[in-house]
Length: 331
Ligand code: KG4
Ligand code: ZN
Image (tube, rainbow, N blue to C red; front, top):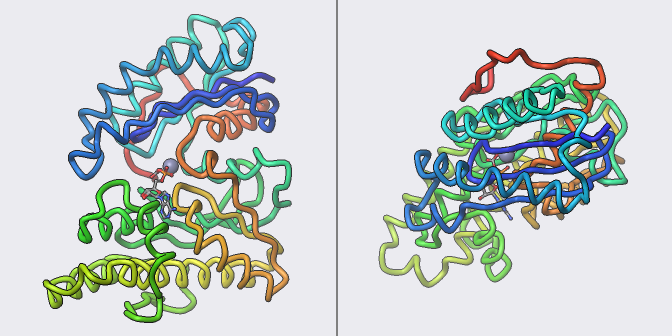
């Protein structure tokens, strides 16, 4: 089954062609980073306008890269939520009309389910059941995954998402947007031992996260050292990153042990973090747990993961009605 995936939930316009939920025939991602950079974060209205400009060429390029034509598409999967409503509307409405025009089925996909399925686009992937640690700009959660479309959320962030905390701390340090990749790079030049920021484990048996206290603590450090903090930004970045990574690793491994799972997948934009990659592999190995992290292009928002998730719904005949609407929040 050839599925066209469409993703426009935030600041990436993406389209991909995936065969049988696993083989990527093409994946096109048009990033809006340069548009939002001067504002230090995503401006929703600008995001919608840029999606409108990009959606047609991005879908055309995805078909061309796969050496396919519209008539070869067996079904369409488009992100329905959660995300920015105006942004989602562009991709979802486009997908609806294309599915109607081609007379093929359409399924609306939960963006978080798409991230969970991103790990199956790699040849080495976990067997069910496994734990999925989802770390993105909008969400941070731990899932117990039983099938491609069945998963229970064991815990989630009570305030900022992990990626969001990276972005906010980067802004405080004057390092710009998006922050995750800059903090990741700068941390390698600093020491995580010099400044010890707090770790919010909450209740040790809870799989919930909280990063706002850590963010406030970095802010307080900057305010208390207004002249000198600029001399050791790599140490601040490394200290902050370590505090986030330690808690993420602890909770994911704790969840795997509690559910008797042999595998953990780390997905979402912040799964690209090099320290998280290293530490979760080291910590999990000690417990005999395997770790699966998709390649960089599949960690950040993309449409291949939407098509992969869509395949499993479409093959069971699950489609969405024409009056279906987008949603901003995960329910
Ligand atoms: O999944 P994603 O592309 O979009 C959402 O669904 O939110 O995630 C984007 C987030 C941003 O907050 C970005 O700063 C973070 O992923 N990110 C990173 C790294 N690369 C991207 N965070 C930490 N380390 C990185 N290397
Ligand atoms: Zn995402």
